[in-house]
Image (tube, rainbow over all chains, first blue to last red; front, side, top):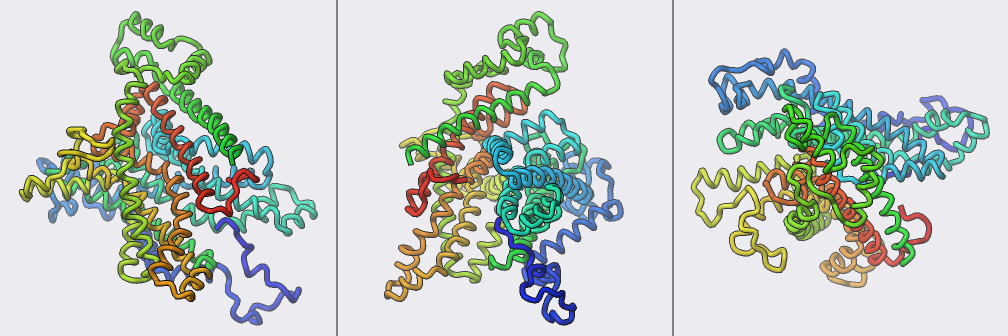
Length: 305
Length: 335
């Protein structure tokens, strides 16, 4: 998976002159090809449809949610699902359905923002390590090894206790701890790609290193980054739930799904719906990202099939 | 081979040193004065004399560099310090908590091996059958369920519901704590112990079992396409011999590596599982101590975990070479 070949459409061998598009007949842009293969994976399509719906729910939350996230129905604590409260109410009488709808915003925001931070850090460090190799590579790889030697949960909880419990702090914690595997994968890609002839050619042409790294090598190293990025969003949502469970996640009354699970754990006997609805939201969302990641991997790299 | 092992062992030292030093300094950047915390809480007004005594006792007034040196001077002699909160020796806490964690881990690994590997194997042999599809979805689901959620679902299914429905007493499982703590041969539960062990063990095993099954399936599918498998069939061996003797042995290799790499995931899962089931092991102790900023306990227990993690990875690399004679360690970089 780490050995990425240059995209096929650009390496058509033989005639040097550019053929007119219609003469190529079956040639399709890479993107169309990937989409065609992705569509064939049913689970990945289910995941994609689910995520699009979830995105719409997040955007239109105020229109969908019948109550606000802090509104308390008087006297209706820990009520099971009913016509008034589809997912029931929580320990202080708030409508769970509304909170889960707004929670989609929190989870997607944390998932995408933290992943963006991880991808940027992982991409920069991995690219530098793989491209320059030698001492730079040794130093960066050692740093990665050191952080990977600390169990993830301990590392995340320790950093979380420094940054506090605002939503931005949680994003920062998960972003700063999630880049290690991304950096490793990017490094491996850059290491093998920077030895190819076209990089040598670009060097001979006198292009700057930065230009070679990001304009020449990066486009060819994108495929594994896209796949791991997708899976990372799901992993971040899981980690946020774990932080909430250990009481270092976002602060109440943030409608975080993890926090709702944390609230529901005490009511397992009397009101299991308090746990099952938010937990279901987490599982379905993470599953969607896992399926899409799998689908993308197969679609981007048909050799694996 | 020997020089390879020696080199890897030497590499563990700087890795562990840097990891623990990072955590040490991280905790000193925390807002709030640790002495105040030890003396009774950050919010209450505390007699300055008490804070002074705490500072003297733990050397918290010393410059950070001095504290850092003291910490490593102690740690090298395997003196892990004493808890800020309970004043207990961290070595004692470790000796008390480690067996519970190790027992739980042993059972999780047993489940991983006896469930994960056969399921992955069957899935690969009957590719695209209904059982294969169900396995694919279940293993994906297991990696998407937060460990503690699975723990609660199991508690609800096998403890809360049976209680409500009035299941017979012999079928009742326990969900909190370690119970009588009675074991034979270190890890075999005796008496009522199994009622307390079974749910946390399944919970802890879930993630790694799913990973092992997935890996086993992929690895076996690859092996099934290999030429030597066709040769084995052509020789007239029974399908059973072909799959088990020629296929399984080769397909197990990547799975063994995975079990090693996976150990980090297992530790994370252990922290959450032990917390969910109030299992008195190292994992729940670390979670509690981090929350209470009990630095010596966090550092002491993490040190043990980091060391174990490094050693297991080394063992996996060595066993890999032992399984597959084509791999020669020590020549070039193995990473």
